[in-house]
Amino acid sequence: MPRPPRADEAGGLYHALNRGNLKATIFQKEGDYFAFEKILSEGLERYRVELFSYQLMPNHYHLVLRPLVDGEMSRFMKWVGGTHTMRYHAHHHTSGFGHVYQQRYKSFPIQDDDHFLVVCRYVERNAHRSGLVSAAEDWRWGSLWRWLQKSELNPKLLSAWPISRLPNWVERVNQPLTEKELEAVRRCAHRGQPLGDASWAGSIAKRLKLESTLRPKGRPKQE
Image (cartoon, rainbow, N blue to C red; front, side, top):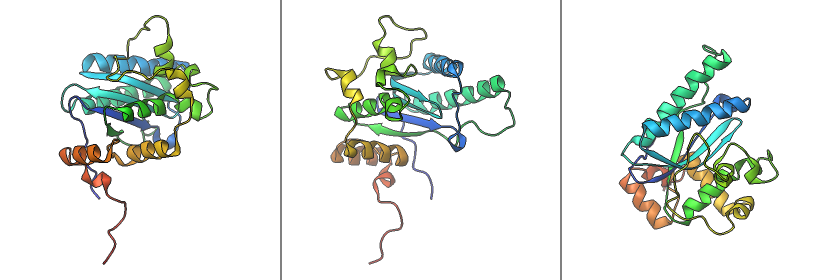
């Protein structure tokens, strides 16, 4: 079955993620995380993309971003993935030992309302949900920790959000998503399905030729 087209429209909001090949660890030490943040910074300077939220996990990463030019997210993600792979192999002396990533990155469009905030909560509490830290803000390799710092860190990564954070944002991030919210984000991440109200999702899917992501999986039932 052919893959659906990649949604990558200027001004849209997207969640993008990628995982290590066979879920292998891609960030093995502190320096690996620093190196990837540097690559993100270089990519943001090269390409017209805004980064709002991110989290680097031992074997995968999440980004919430907005391309400012049609097709720019794909160019940015291709450069980030390729550069990270090249530098990873050079540093760890693993050239010729297989792929760093399991496949091309996955992504899905997000409606610019509370759905955006749900995705950012999902991303920023990822390490906490996985039991790596006791509080979401303690995970050094993500946007929540970075946002809470008193002075802007170098390299600069984050752009101003298109929607204001809700009051008591840190406390909200530390609260689990509802089962409905969690299932929706995971389904959209897996299928590339737009995340938003039904009418918005249907409209954006039609415009971006993503209708197949809204259909139930499997063969249609025989009448």
